[in-house]
Image (cartoon, rainbow, N blue to C red):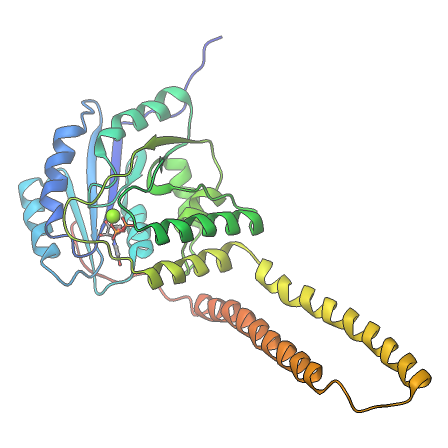
Length: 317
Ligand code: UDP
Ligand code: MG
């Protein structure tokens, strides 16, 4: 049986979000040119400067004039976050296939040729990458990351792969599907997985950044995981409903017990401590539930404003 493959890749776009990457970028371009050998493919690298505070923009302009055929540049008016930068890059990409990779060489460019091969020869729509270890990462961060993946996979229908990086290569068809998801609160790992398509995960050992430092503090990551959970699951809302039902059942049972006890033994003023505990417990639970509902309303509020995901200040055609 002969299999014809629908995915031929003649042009490839590589989207690179950059925030304060002045040291990494020249090394990135060097390594990229050295390690990505795809003679039959025309490559464009779209660097999205996400409102960097250092000289990233100047470095990028410089690289653009050195490699006018390779480098395209989009620069935001301020820092909008990596998710926005990815979205801008995907919108600007023109290739038959689009890769997304970090500027700090934590996503090894030498994997690209193999990723291209998997799409053109093996009928995959997407090749993702997975770190098999978290070497060089603080243990506490790895622990919370693992917990996050466990939690989100148990409460969301969208599967998120533990250790999967944003580094991936996608067909034009898949990119177009992602661009249709124009939501304001973006959580790419979820979006990539939500659109579906046949994805193969390549595994590699964790690589540390070449220069500069990570932009994620523990609290950034924490709030990013909350975004992930809120965007891809309504389970937290159900906690409030469930707890409400349990509390109601307990109240009915207690009511019956107290009624019978009063009939049998008369009324006595006792149980002050337990009353206060119950009030405190229910009160705090109501606040927690309000908070959960508030998180969703906040997201709805931002979504209904329909603000653009980013604002461009400068762009090469
Ligand atoms: N990044 C960005 N905007 C931000 C933060 C990060 O475009 O507000 C880019 C950053 O330049 C890098 C990528 O996103 O190319 C991943 O960032 P980082 O290396 O800090 O994250 P980590 O690899 O530690 O998860
Ligand atoms: Mg990094």
